[in-house]
Image (cartoon, rainbow, N blue to C red; front, side):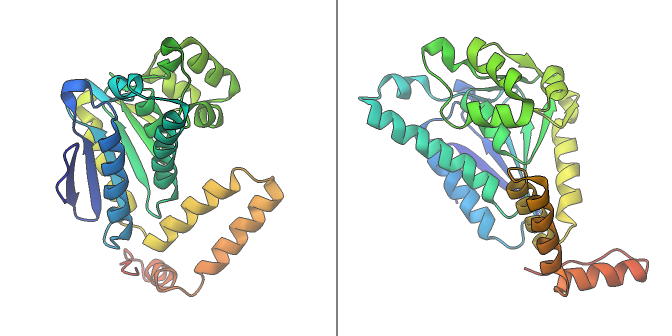
Length: 261
């Protein structure tokens, strides 16, 4: 499909989505949120895709928040709630995708951009990246899940600091507190993101979906319940074509060929 606010390409079993409003630092307007939802739904239905990379166009920003002009034009609280729920549905859709989503954060990830990155499964940051939840500076608060996911990823104290102060943190600090998994030189960002996506793309699609679901659901459960969830998820894979192929390939000392939908 052709999009007004996105670029999409496929590299084998990897889909790459680029937020494409560089003139406004890839600010998330209503159309972009809608198009991202459509694009991710289509990717999720494509059994050939095993991993997705999400990044921003240009050298300066992943996404520098919501479109302030649209926020200023909101007529009432109901319209504001509807806009935020649309953004929340987008971030939930990323988390619920069967295949992993990698955020390649190439610059500013602020407000909605930070929230979008936090919803991804793996975050790789350029050493130029900056993260923040500056909504407090507008007399607002995060609305796409920033107050919730920042606490889950970086802890209550860091969530308080980011959301109450509105100050940005650099990539090194984001890595230290757990907001990102890896920081690389700017020129190597997409190389590393594609490398990781390629590693994931060689795995079983059903196993990727199962482990992602086990982590997402189990992380909110007591340990005993999470362990039971894991055991049942493991058992559900026994006898599947991919598990049969994987164990057979190991015994035959060769690379597995996972083709199951």
